[in-house]
Amino acid sequence: MTDSRLDEGRGAQMWGGRFKEGPNRILWDFTVDHSDRRLLADDVFGSLAHVTMLGKVGLLSDQEVKALTKGLEAIGTEADEGTFQFEEKDEDVHSAVERRLGELVGEVAAKLHTGRSRNDQVALDMRLYLMRSADRRISDLKRFGRILVKAAREAGDLVVSGYTHLQQAQAVPLAHHLLAYAWAINRDQQRFDEVHRRLRVSPLGAGALGGSSLPLDPTVSARYLGLEDSFANSMDAVGARDHIAEYGFAATQALVHLSRLAEECVLWASHEFRWVTFGDALTTGSSAMPHKKNPDIAELTRGKAAIAIGHLTGLMALQKGLPTTYNRDFQEDKAAVFAIDDALAGSLKALGALIDGAVFHPPGPDPSVTALDLAEVLVERGVPFREAHRAVGRLFGSDPNSGQDVWKVTYHDLAAAHSSFRPEDVALTEPVKSVARRRSAAGGSFSSVQEQLRRLDELLA
Image 1: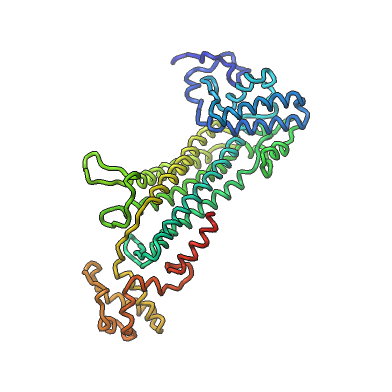
Image 2: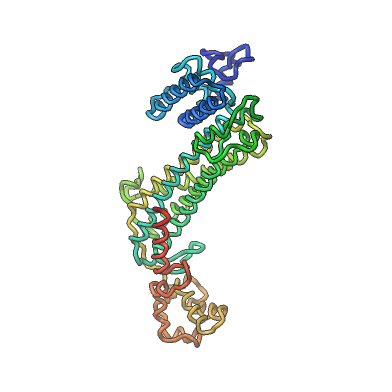
């Protein structure tokens, strides 16, 4: 086994005091994960809060607070402008910030870590990052919901078949079908709202796991950060990862909703369905078959949802066998939740663009979708539903593929099926009339669609 050491030596690490030799390259390559570099702005913000608290409780002088604050703000500017330079010797984002701070303000930078551990530091960074990400996803989800509402409004009174078991079932407005996804997206947004609320707790001050003998005041740093509360138990503060898994679930569930819509887009764009045409600029062709036009965005959305489910499972399994408090296994949570979040952000943007440019032109539904309406007419006349069900079922024969066309049903056919049918009931075999007579609340009626549009306009504003 190679015994190569890092050229920079042990001094670049925050934990090297008791060690006589620097880390082996094998150790370094296996344990260092650069995915936390996206936490740079959050680490700086948390450090500013920590410095402020240290000054308030008298552990730093006013001059030291001023110097550290000025240096951290400079790093924050570098983070915002994308000019911060990470170095190979930076073990993580925390050591990178401390290293850069030393370059800017000198020896006083060594006081930054007073009363703090990387355990409570990374716990805070992740909460701050996920809060920012949740805000962005809420905005993205609202934007996607508005795209669906726009498509539904443009669909007008166009009637299609709703499906169960992928078989035509009941006539509904196309708008009602699209708005079903808008309501799912609205719930996804609510989940992020709820996760955001639980993220607003500061773990800063918990230290490695048991707090500190120094006179720290976690409420000061929590207020600086704009968080509603500070931790109630220091071990839980550094050992909990349920908030990360919960964020992962909220994002993965949103991806699952997008995946279901994506699957319908794939079906709708097929030659067999012919419900929709997607723009050339948002579809791809085949390297072999000149006639192909593929909805790759929809297909990749399904794929990203599948991978996200795997990452979410990993986040759950990561926690299940660990004793409290911090364990190095937790390093793996960042790459997983970042991957889920990135997949959702990308899918919302791409699938939203695909649907926003879609032209819907579905064929009319099969007349059989009016069967329930015929049965319910009999129910309104006092016929037990099971009897009405059997009577209407006989109109279609025993073979569902026999080609029986209910449009051609005459009053004679209806009367033969049940004596309570009337001549005017023949008109009920038209799908548009089926939708027009729908009366149940929030069902697939034209009036329901209008009410849904009104409510969603308010919720997604």
